[in-house]
Image (cartoon, rainbow, N blue to C red; front, side, top):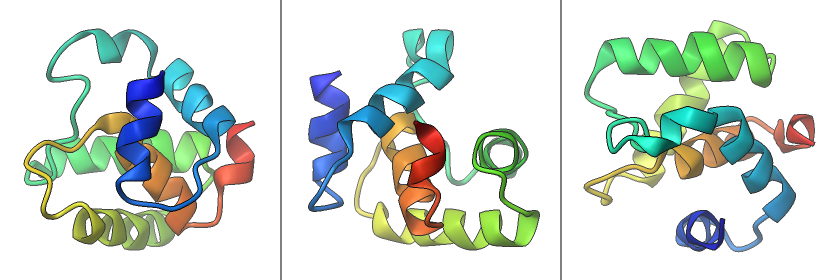
Length: 103
């Protein structure tokens, strides 16, 4: 868990550790594989999964709001060669003002 928190801290000053834990729990078994731990931002199918799965179902975002948030996170993480799924999801919730929905 501390690895996830440390990675999120690279992108935001204050980290809600409870929200990070909730995201890790939500991702569950997906975090056990190398591919599952990362978000491939150049893969449109992957981004559709993020939008229609996590953003819509967990955060309650409409497609347009989800897409705007995803674009903001991609921009924020553009220097990172590998984008952690937990960090990506956290930053998406932060960017869309939905961190409170994770508790």
